[in-house]
Length: 525
Image (cartoon, rainbow, N blue to C red; front, side, top):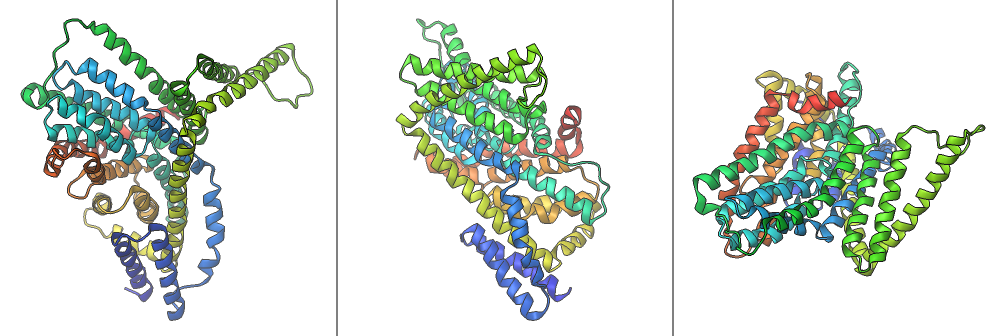
């Protein structure tokens, strides 16, 4: 092994040690990289010209359109969290299905899936579900292990159920890795991979996970009723009251998810524009819930109606451009209607913002969004510096040779990479793993003939499982932080073990039946 390759491995090891020691991720990656670059220049093993390319690599990153979806999805998720829509939904479903064995647990899984699809942030989902549902489940005599396991597992669904910032970032990195594999390894050019493809590929595995989670809770409740008991219906209560309440609570989040995912998967909107639809829809939902007067609620509904009508007009295919030389009467009439609807939507949106400002929710949401977005982009810049220096030492070629030499061919290389990512998931967040590890290992794996969408979904499922696995899973730490004292840490660990087995089952299903991840993207294409 040559000196540059030794320095590349040493750089990777020192970076991992610094991250595990708790130092700031972005500055650890960039600082270690520049330190080793200086060593390489001093020893004549690193071309300083690589560093001159750094500005040209950073600017396209921070101006990439697809990454604008990150702050928009974060804004959407935080807005829904602050508006307590999940709390209403969980309460309604708990009252309705809590009269069945395991019904409350299944409700938690379903609400967790909806919340995951709405927020896409694992920590926010686990904390929210822990605060809302864990006390209720314990009060209704659910076993602490089953209750905590269901909540932790449902919270990690934000990793795999679209729209998710995990899939946005992972999709962007897989797309870059696919282009790198085509350029560096002579891979046949068969098109590009988009974030929308990863959204479509993750949909079916995510739904399978939700179904298996609910099935496990139902079977457990049937075989061991004392772990998930049912409540009796009050004699003076009409069950249809709970049905109507549940349907009313479900309409808003389901409508928003369908609008966002439908616009992206149908090709009507890019993921970034779909995220913008989601952010605006979240403002409408939160404003309608917080509005103190009927006028404000009518303004929100008017703005929403105006936007829906504008989209419907756009789907008709009528030319609405203003720079036309010749106008037909139909085009003039439709453009006039579109201008009116646009004004209605703008005025209604302004009125919709007032309740959020009055309740100080908009400021909190904006600050949280700015904090998370800044963290993502700073880590991305640090990972870019690390990747550039690592490649300057020939580290990418070293990784490719190591994976090619792995016993078992491409399957051996895949298992090795998945194991490393699984272990790193104990200590690092998905953002660091995605930005640092994926650019290094994905191109040689794709060069071995693996489908990029299939590989991306496997990585997402693998990280989701890692975040759920004792003793270091991030989801377990989040839940431990909000769990009441009577819930022991051993209860949490014991409760997630069955769900981890379910995770491995789904990973194996996707691994041996690639169509679960690739069929829907191909069908949509």
